[in-house]
Length: 208
Ligand SMILES: C[S@@+](CC[C@H](N)C(=O)[O-])C[C@H]1O[C@@H](n2cnc3c(N)ncnc32)[C@H](O)[C@@H]1O
Image 1 (cartoon, rainbow, N blue to C red):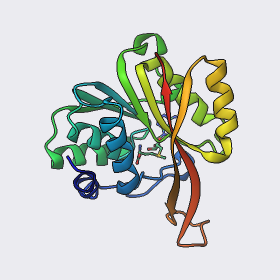
Image 2 (image 1 turned 180 degrees about the horizontal axis):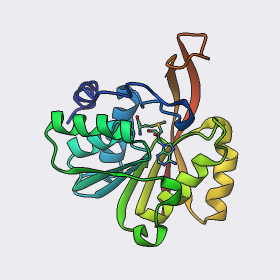
Image 3 (image 1 turned 90 degrees about the vertical axis):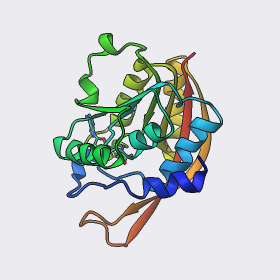
Image 4 (image 1 turned 180 degrees about the vertical axis):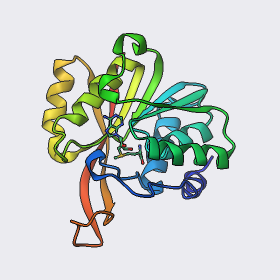
C-alpha cells in the first residue's frame, strides 16, 4: 500500500468525541500515523503477520493502520471505555477481523502474563504533562516488557536525554527515526491558539 493511500484510509478513522484532558487524549493525526506505520512496515518489517500491541490505543488510528497493513493481530489497550466505544465502531466500519481491544490501565498491566508476548509494540503514550509525571516512561517500561522485538513510540524532543538515559539503564538500544512537529488541535479550553506545535521524536527501541 502506498503512503498516500494509507493516509487517506486513516482519515476515515473517527476520533475522541469528548477528549479527556487528564488522560491526554490527543489523537495522532492521519498524516503522522501513516508515516509512522509506513516506516515500521516498509523499513523494519515489524507489522505484517506480527502480533502487535498498541498501548493507549484511544480510538485506534494506530491499531487500524496496523491491521490494514496486515498485522497477524493488533490488540489495542486503553483505560477509557468511551475511547474504546469509538475504537469498536471504527473496527466495525473498517470490517477488520485482525484487531482486538482490552480495557486496561497500562500501568497495572499484569507484566508477568504479558512478558514478551507481542512481537511489536506501537504507541503514542500520554507525555506525562497532566499531573501524571512519568507516565510516558511507565508506558515505555511496560511496552519493553511486552515486546519481543521492537517498540515504536513518540516522546517529546525536550525529554530525549532522559529517555536515552532510561534506555541505557534498561540496556535497550534506541534510535530517533524522525523528528516531528506534532500539531495539537485546540480541543481544550486552555489552548488560546487554534493549534499548538510541539516537537516530538519518533523513536525505535530495539529489544533484541
Ligand atoms: C495521546 S493519546 C493517543 C491515542 C491514540 N493512540 C492515537 O494515537 O490517536 C493517549 C491515550 O492513552 C490513554 N491512556 C492514558 N492513560 C492511560 C493508562 N493509564 N492506561 C491506558 N491508557 C491510558 C488515553 O485514554 C489516550 O487514549
